Length: 175
View 1 (cartoon, helix red, strand yellow):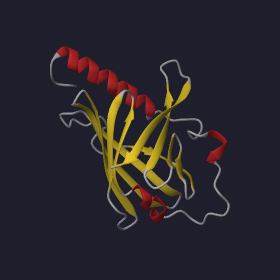
View 2: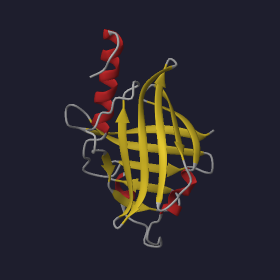
View 3: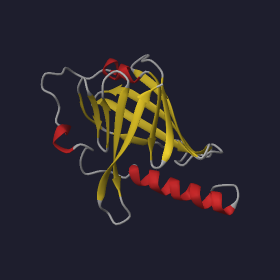
View 4: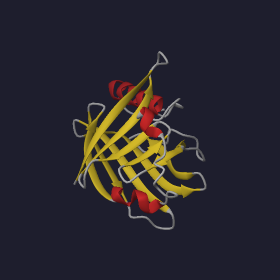
């Protein structure tokens, strides 16, 4: 449930529905044939994601985005995400990138601006690992592309209400 006035509550619920659609299981990785693992790359470790460390600012969904990642510690990186429009927060995410036996796994918990969680207490959305290279971290439904030292595109596979899939590109630059 979203607290607040009716128009704001409707807008937040619409945002929540859009973002939850992003978390719907995807049939393929967000960048198609590039989802195959690079045979020259060794077993992925959290060090392969260290390039994400720091603060990133970007745009997507008609909003301003901010994502911040801590350096790797103990096989994990912790991050947070904020989406805002017209200087008003729309949603937050707590992020965990971690080494697993299957590769790197990306987990997300979503929150309203009043910090009410979207998932159940012990639940989260997990993006299963697909492949890692020096320029991309690929998950089922999410690809993080490294574009030089100071740019990154995050490509989400979104399932529309009609059941079709489309890619949504979030463009970031290092702050």
